[in-house]
Image (cartoon, rainbow, N blue to C red):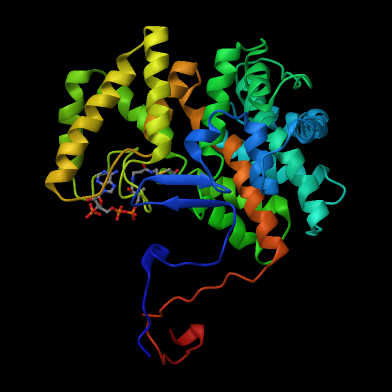
Length: 379
Ligand code: CMC
C-alpha cells in the first residue's frame, strides 16, 4: 500500500480543540472565540482564566482566581539551590527545563492525571514559571532571589522578582500584552509535544518539560533570541538590506522572525507587537532596533513577493525589540516565551487528559529488509 507522507505533519488535523482558532489566510487568531486584538485589553490572568475555563471571569471569579494563585509562586528552596549550583554560563533554557522537571520531586502527588490534580499542578506552574526565570537571572548576577509579592499580578510579579523593584503600570501593561499574545497558539510544536507526551498518560511535569525543550528550538520559541542576535549583528539601518540579501542568497537561508507554518499573511500578534515596539521606541528614544526591524520587513516583503513566497513577520520578529526595550537580556527571551506559553500548554493538557487517545503516527520504512543475522565473530 502506498502511504501518503506528510513531512512535518503539514496539513494533518490530529484532533479537535475548543481552545483557540487560527485563520492563516486571513491572519486571524482567537482564544475561545475572542479576537486576540481585543484580549490585549485584558490582564494575563483574565486570559488564562478564559483559556482554562472557556469564558472570561467576572469580577468575583477573577478575584478568587488571583487569591488562589497568590501564595503559589515561590520556589522550593531545593530548586533554588540546584539553580545556584549550575555552571554560571549555562543557557537559561537548560536551567528552566531542568527546574521544571525537578519540581515534580517536590510535589507529593506528581503523577495522578485526574482533572483536579492536573489543574492543581497547572495553577502552581503558572506562577512558578515567572519565578524560575527571574531566579535564574538574579542568581547568575550574584543576586539573591526575590519572592513574589501576593499583591502583584503575574506580569507585575515577573518584573518585580526580576529587578527587586515594583514595576510601573506602563511596564506591567506591556508585559501583560506580551504574555497574552504568547499564551496560546493551537498545535504549535511545543504544545503538540506536550500533548503527545501526555497522551501516554505520563505526568504533567514530564509533558511540560517536553514542551519547554521543544520551545527552545530556533525554528520555534528560540527564534526571538535569534532575531535579536541578528539585529545586533546588523547594527545599523544601512546594513539591514545587505544582511537580508546575503541571508536569502544562501541555500535555504532563513531570516529569523519571518515565516510561519500556518499564516500566509502577517501574523496578527506581530502586528500588535509592532505597535508596542513603535510606542516604546518613541517613548524611550531608543529607536534603532525599531528602525532596523522596519527596514528588514520592507526588504523581506519585496524579496518574498519576487519569489512568490507567502512569508511575513511572525510573533518573534517584533517581540525581540520589545524585550530589548524592556531591558531583558537576550537569552531570557525564550524563557519569557515559556512564562506565557505555560498557560496554553496547560489548557491543552486539560483537554488531552480529559479525552485521551495515545498519539502514535506511522513512519514509512525505507531501510533494507530481509538481512540475515551473523554472530559477531563472523562479521
Ligand atoms: N526566511 C526566508 N525565507 C523563508 C523563511 C524565512 N524565515 N521562512 C520561509 N521561507 C520561504 C523559503 O523560500 C522556503 O522555501 P525553501 O525551503 O526552498 O528555502 C519557503 O518559504 C517555505 O518555508 P518552510 O521552511 O518550508 O516552511 P515551514 O512551514 O516548514 O517552516 C518556519 C515555517 C517558521 C519554520 C520557517 O518559516 C522558518 O524557519 N522561519 C524562521 C524561524 C522563525 O522565525 N520561527 C518562529 C516561528 S513563529 C513563532 C513560534 O512558533 O515560536
